[in-house]
Every structure is written in structure tokens, then in C-alpha cells.
Amino acid sequence: MAVFTGNNYKGKSQKERIQEITEQLEAGVIAVFESDAYKAYLKCMSKFHNYSLNNTLLIALQRPDASLVAGYNAWKKDHGRQVRKGEKGIKIIAPCKYKVELDEKDDDGNQKVAEYTGFKVATVFDYSQTEGRELPSVGVNELTGDVSDYRKLFNALTEICPVQIYSEDIEGGAKGYYSDADRKIVIKSGMSQLQTIKTMIHEMAHEKLHAKENLDKDHPVDRRTKEVEAESVAYTICQHYGLDSSDYSFTYVAGWSSGKDTKELKASLERIRSAADDMITGIDKSLEKQAKRETQRISRDDAR
Image (cartoon, rainbow, N blue to C red; front, top):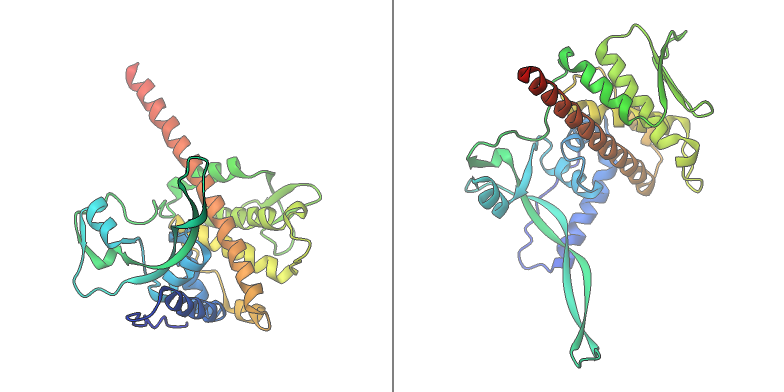
């Protein structure tokens, strides 16, 4: 995996600092598709699914084991924690707004001002680099893969899936499939709970990314790319909820990425990131609703 060098930015302009980070980011896109690096990246993305693609890559390149990041002041003011002395920060690119006075005035004679959005290098620190007040939870809320949570996650997936999911006997080695023509997902019956959940997410990723109406006609993707994207989304979401999906294999990813340019690889990474983010957000909302209904049920039972 490419190593983020953490260059000394002293004496360099903001533009030069951003340029350095961008160049390392571009180099990291290719490197991240090596087997171990790609797995580390997806694990990082599972924790920071709502971060931009570029910042997710930057965090993964600099600190693959990061669990929860925030700025120096945010840790101190919002969480009651202090960054330990000597800790090296994680550099990300953050948007910033600035105002420019225009050479004209408004109807009241006041100088007109235009507001623009630019970018700056920002520094964040991981939870492990801080000390102080304990947080209620670190990173994502994990279901830990315990079978007792199987029904909750199964129901959440079923609820957010835009097509019907069926359980059937499937001949051959396939564990499931998505039919675009019939607008349905079929999961092989009789599998373990973990395999069922993982397969459901994989096929839902196919529907989300590769349904006919969701494909980019100007940028077609081949079957192998579709499989890489769907497996990557499934792996990311399983990691997010603490499910053990270590049997996933990424050895073929390097072969798939060979010969593809940076723009093409980044396009796939962005599709993976966006799909995983949308699905995790939907699953979380469904789980929250289930928990609320369960709390209300217990309250009603206690009142009887």
C-alpha cells in the first residue's frame, strides 16, 4: 500500500499543500487496489461511509486502523478529550467559504460581496490519539454478527430493498442473483445466516448500481467490474455492522484493475462508496424504527 508521507507543509502555500495531497491521492488510487490495501481501504470506508471518496482514501492511506476522527478543537470542546502531545495528525481536504468584494454596489450603495467555496488542508486525529472522557460508543454501532441480531438486519434489508426478495432453491454454485428483467432478487435457501445476509447485500448492490435505469450509458461497465463493485459494497456493509466476512477474497481485484486508468478506478470507488453510504444510512434508519417499535411494545406490556 502506498504510504502517505506526511510532508512538512511549513512555508508552502495552501494551493501547494492541496496539490501535494492530491498527487499522493492519485497515486494511492492505483495502489489501493492491491489485495491487502483494498481490504484495508474498504474497512476504513465502512467506518467513514459518509466521508467523501478523497477523504476516505486519505484516511485509509495515512491511518488504516482509524476508528473515529475529529479535529483538535472538536475533540476538546465537543467530546472532552485531548489529543496527546506529539501525535501526528491525519491530513484531509476540507471545503471552506470565502468572500470577495465586487467592483459594484447594490441599490443601497453598499459594496457587493460574492461568496465562493474553496478547499483547504485540514488536520484531524483518530480516537486512539486522544485521551479523556470515554465516549458512549466509538465508530459505528455494531451488531457484532451475533445470530440473535439476524432477524433485525434481515428485516432492515428487506424493508429498504426496492425490489422483492425471494428465497428459492438455486441449482449450481450461485448463492443468489438479481434479475433486472423481473425486478427481483433471489437468495438460495438453506444457507447460513451470515451467508444469507452477505448475499442479500451483494445482490441489492447489483440492483442499486447495475439496474438498467441506474447504469451510466456513456460509461458502461463489464461483468467483472460489476462483480467487484457488488462484492466491495457487501464487504463494506458487513464490516460496518461487525459481521465476519473474512472469507471474502480480493486476490482478483489487482487483475481486474490492471490496465485501467486512474479516472476509471476512481469512478468505481465512488460508486462503491456512494452505494454503501446510501444503504448503511437506510439500514440504520430501519434498525432505529425497529428498536423504537420494540421499546413501545415493552412499554405497553409493562402497563398491562
